[in-house]
Length: 101
Image (tube, rainbow, N blue to C red; front, side, top):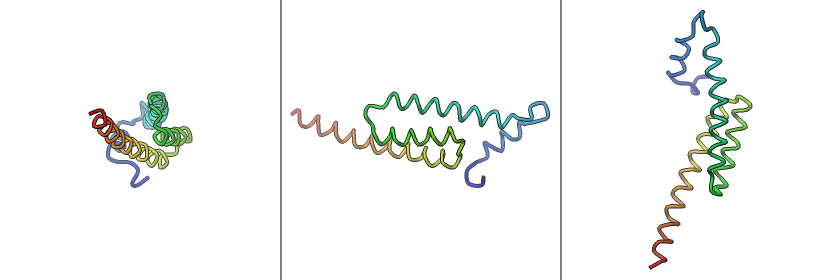
């Protein structure tokens, strides 16, 4: 898992003890469940952002498959497409505002 987890995961492992031996697994399961729900929320908020939606779907599939590497890569793609869309829409509205004069 080297390169995929940081010190936050190690801190979670440190919290696991005999009283709660499945703590980390429960947190990871919750992460996948919550992240899938959050991605669905993002998808419903999309305004025709086709590429962002495609990447959200990919992220969701990786979450369902519990594919940590795929989730990381897909999430990076979601952020990249979101950023690209934001820049393009900002430029679009700037041109639109100028054309109104």
